[in-house]
View 1 (cartoon, helix red, strand yellow):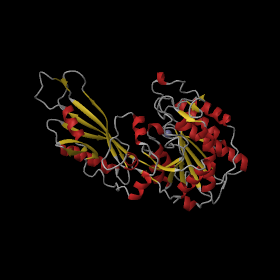
View 2 (view 1 turned 180 degrees about the vertical axis):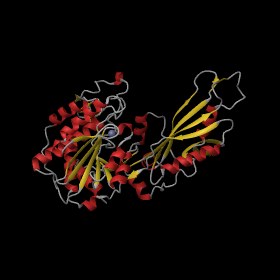
View 3 (view 1 turned 120 degrees about the vertical axis):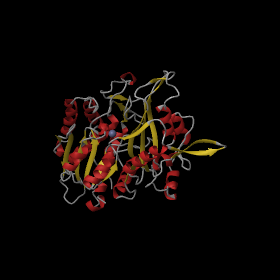
View 4 (view 1 turned 30 degrees about the vertical axis):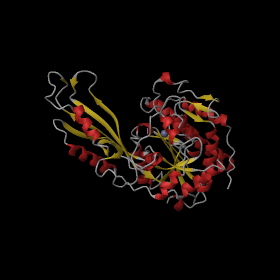
Length: 467
Ligand SMILES: [Zn+2]
């Protein structure tokens, strides 16, 4: 099957994207009016799908639907219109809220905050749908649009909205225009994302900071205590009488629900072209390190992690700090239960029993389990075929988003629908960083691929797509 959707001239889409990017919808700092302006702009582009702005308890969502294909599957296109803060403006080479075309790198890119996360990838679907409808008079399947304005701040009001509107939003499959292809060198589909829990380990000693001369040696130092606790979170190997970290997590129960890497999956990952030295050079570390017994990609895609993200305590002056806080987060895989993981860490920390201080684990609210779609799911098959059509002769990789996308779990519980990631952003396009960009070629490729995907999904029954 070949999709013959004549695409609107790229220039026209870029003109639209320029208007959209110019609305600085940074959900951390923008006014409600600015956020509403961005939502309203996108709703206007969805006029063919009764596009509209709907209220939540936070920033509004953009909704739309075209349901004129009775008997065909229904897909829900998800994305977000909010963007990350700009960060240090001095690091931007061009103004963040101005779409700038730069033909000198990666075969041509556009720059601006939100171009790749997620304004460009959403707009190309919207414009593809409009073009398809204009050309054919109908879409091959039913389409819902749900574009939120709080993704970059953890989607605090999306769950309540989706649960309250679950009947209207009913879909057999969610297709996320958010996410990214793993690398620029070959097309890829992400079949899984990691879960996330985070917490502070708060160690308190005296009532206030104490002079380290006048009080030294008489009370426990919370920084020492916290260091002991943090060191106790990871495993050690014994080597020549010395002990070094072995990359594993020492918390009993942490690995519950994590399956051993099957020989099949190991082989599959080992077949992925991946240059460890190039990766090492890119991150700039003197050497790569991680859980013993696994390669870099095994660890990145299939193994859970526990990271100390930061330590807040004291400073370079002669006191015994009265408080030390360790900021800890875990990326989860498989069937790891977020509640049980945080309970296991709490119990382990308590069991370490450091003397002379009070220790408290304060768990953050958001707890997201890992997510996975079966590689044999009809949606993955359709997506692979669509990408093969747009990128002939190139292997389509099945990758893992080592980050966390809480909406997937929400859609599974509220709508009973799996999520397919189908984004035409690429992971190296400086998401969340200064000088964010999008490869211009991905716009036309993405439009063709979405059209091919919808045509292929339309050949399945709603029950098959909703498996
Ligand atoms: Zn995003």
